[in-house]
Length: 116
Image 1 (tube, one colour):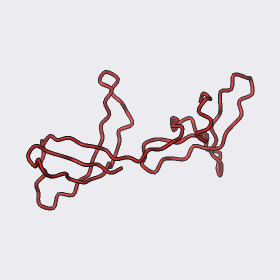
Image 2 (cartoon, helix red, strand yellow; image 1 turned 45 degrees about the vertical axis):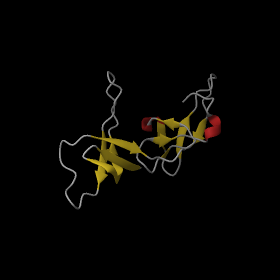
Image 3 (cartoon, helix red, strand yellow; image 1 turned 180 degrees about the vertical axis):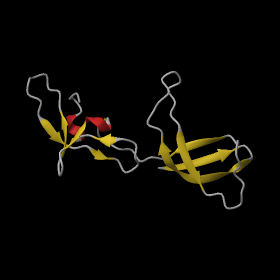
Image 4 (tube, helix red, strand yellow; image 1 turned 90 degrees about the vertical axis):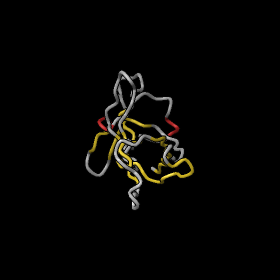
């Protein structure tokens, strides 16, 4: 995911970089997540302990995001079980990992009214 960094030290400049890692754990008290960003720094202008503002530029996506452990990998097919309120719980194909590493996308977005 692309990221733009601005610093008070360089007010008229934005450094372009990308997200390298998103920590899967959220701090429940502050509701924050650690994110590792990578920026090219050929001139050595970016230094440790500099503070700035980052804008993440992700493309909007439509779909359901589900926990990775909700996907049952049965070899060639990955399935997700749906909670329908009945005793039978049908399986739906899905559970593809997102390209940005930010989780798993569930079955088609049109199934948003169902619980996973």
